[in-house]
Each structure stands twice: as structure tokens, then as C-alpha cells.
Length: 368
Ligand code: ATP
Image (cartoon, rainbow, N blue to C red; front, side, top):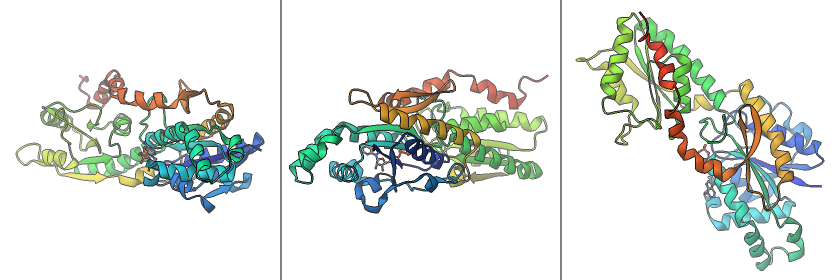
């Protein structure tokens, strides 16, 4: 029986459990034995009871659960060959040579590296007397398939990553709550959302909540961002708006590459010689990762989990490592490293869309 291992790695995201459930059950459905690797690459390196065989009922109720029930970790050892050698040893000891990894671009890059190194890792294990040549022969090729689990929606080549719509929903719900109190006291709120390198959450939350102004890493603000923001906020206030919402991604920058912080934005809005608005900062933090997965993420995780099992069984040594994506509403396989490399071009894609226009609709600048 073919043995397929499933693991989650990097930052957790809602929908990872749905991925594990789908992969475990699809593997059983196709006559394979599913294994879960607990605690991400840490489990792969340490082995032992962190690698466990799973049954159909083990994943009951996992479809909607937030976070990842099999754990995740940042694992320094896996960056080193020594760690990856231990990982290879543990997989062979369990008879596993098919791996499905759900994680961010770091986790998937690590997976691709592991697969590329696999033949030489096996040679080294034989050299060191851990296994005989005959013992490793059936495992000469490691097949790996990646799934993108990330709240940031930060991988190119897929329309959505597993977890991003749950986080967006959480942010929108939080902004709705804040708006009531902002409006009551005629206050401004600067809301910091996750996104050190990718501003998708901030951008979409801005569009979805009609925020007054947003800051994202991909579109550094011009030198005159202070004047621009104050002009827009003042305009809204003049039209009778009692609340001001500014959404700022963690990685917000200006054109010189300097960080724009929530404190800088607050100080500007509150400046006694300027708009003098009572302004508060709210950092949403890990609330954005929590809670159950929204319907879209459950659906995406399940459809992609099914495809991942099929892909890992179809894979041959000549094929690149696949990542499962969704494009134009279709679940597709794509070369993983191509997607990782293309991710750097995302800023250009954002520039080319009409998000500025969408943001301006809240502003009534076209009214009258
Ligand atoms: P997130 O989007 O939440 O940051 P991520 O998967 O990008 O998720 P990382 O911390 O970059 O998160 O990677 C998770 C783990 O993957 C690391 O702790 C490490 O064990 C492994 N890893 C990442 N990059 C590599 C690499 N280049 N080589 C080997 N292992 C890697």
C-alpha cells in the first residue's frame, strides 16, 4: 500500500484542518495509507510519535476548525542538511515517499529543496549504514505536492490561498464593530492588519469596508501622502461623515522605503494644528488568524486536498514539484518554484487594477 504523509507548516491559517481531512480521506478512498506529520518540519526531523498513521474517523469534525490540529512550527534544523537527512531517515523508516505540505512560500521552498536533494540524502544514509541499498531502492523518488496555506494571499499563480478569506472576513467584522464606536464619538481609527510583504488583506478590507485610506507594502505612498490623506479625510468630514477608518498593513512603506507606522498616521490625524481628530490605534493581531474557516476556505481546502492526493500519486521524477492552485475558479496543478518566483511580480499586478477607483467610491468625490 502506498503511504502518503500530510503536514502543515509555517504560520497557521483557517482551512488547514480541512486540507488534512480531505487528504487523509482521499488517500484512504484511493487505497493508500495516510500519515500525519505533527509540528511541521520539526516532526519530520524528530520523527517518533510525531509521524502517525491516520484513520478516516481521526479527522471527523476537522472541516471547519480553525488553526491546525496537527500543529505547525518554524524549524531551524530543516534549513540544514543534517536536519533534512534526519527527515529522510524518518520517512524511509515509515515507508513514506509521498508528501503533501500545506504552508507558505518558505515551507514550499523547503519542500522543493528536500525533493531535489532526496537522492543524495538516500546515498548518504546508505553510506552511513542506516539502510542497505536494497532497503532504499523502492523509495528512490520522493514525490511532493504543495498547497498554499496562508492568510496573506501572498502566492502568485493562485487566486486565493487557503485561509485568506477567513482572515478578510475577520477584519471586516472587526472594522464593522469599531465603526459603531468611531461614529458615536466622531473618532478616527487607524487599524493595523497583518501583511508584512503582501497588502492583499489591507487592500481588500479597504474596499470591503469603504475605508477612508489604506497603506500597503506593494504600493509605497508618494512623499505627499500626508497631504493626500488629510485632504481625503477632511473632505469626508465636511460631507458629514463622523467616522474615519484608515487601514494599514504591517509592511506599509513610503517611496523611500521607510516604514509608515500606525503611530505616524495617528499623530497626523490628531495634530492640534491640523485636523485635530480624536484618533485611536487598533492592532488586530492574531484575531485575524482565529476562528472557524469561512465557507470559501473550507471549499478551497477540500477541493485542493483531493487534487493534491491525485497529483502526488501521478507525479514522476521528471515532473517539477507541483503546487495546487485555483485560477478562474478551476483547481489546477502548477510548477511550485515558478509560482514562488512569480510572486515577486505581484506589485505590478496590483498597480494595474482599478483598486484606486474602487476605494474612491466611499469618498463621494464623484458626487454632485
Ligand atoms: P508564512 O507565510 O506563514 O511565513 P512560511 O511557510 O513562508 O509561512 P517560513 O517560516 O518561511 O514560513 O517557513 C516555515 C519552515 O519551512 C521553516 O521554519 C523551515 O523549517 C522551512 N523552510 C523555509 N524555507 C526553507 C528553505 N529555504 N530551506 C529549507 N527549509 C525551509
